[in-house]
Image 1 (cartoon, rainbow, N blue to C red):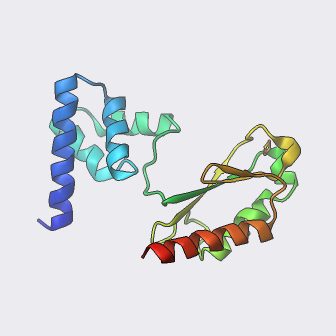
Image 2: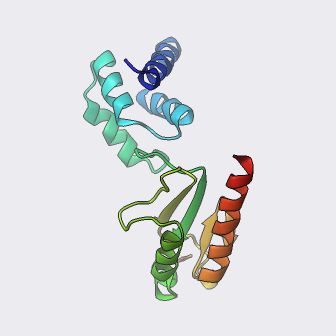
Length: 164
Ligand code: FES
């Protein structure tokens, strides 16, 4: 048993104890799990399924139904590109591709290896007059351009280097 597994096992045991004490439901257990790990690891789901004698499919059903849950690790910084109709027409896909190129992400990758940045796509954010719209860590960029986004991404990378 390696150190990482031991740590994860301890954390899961802890979460399960809290779940049993509070008579919580599976949603709260998944929420607490995501709070600890930043996402819901598959290993956690299978472990809970075994411990609680609940089919793993119930957990995955919940985790895929609610948008709040993430089954893959996410980055420290989140870049959300609107890909609704208005933004699509105004070049959202081109922006996403430019950001991914800047981050050296493959087409099927959405998080950098170092987990610094995750790129997500969403449907209409409700501010179509500002299309294309991109949100970086909660800050909205209307009429976004590749130049603006590249500058922001580089600044996030620079900040991360400073913290190393
Ligand atoms: S389509 Fe992007 S904000 Fe509406």
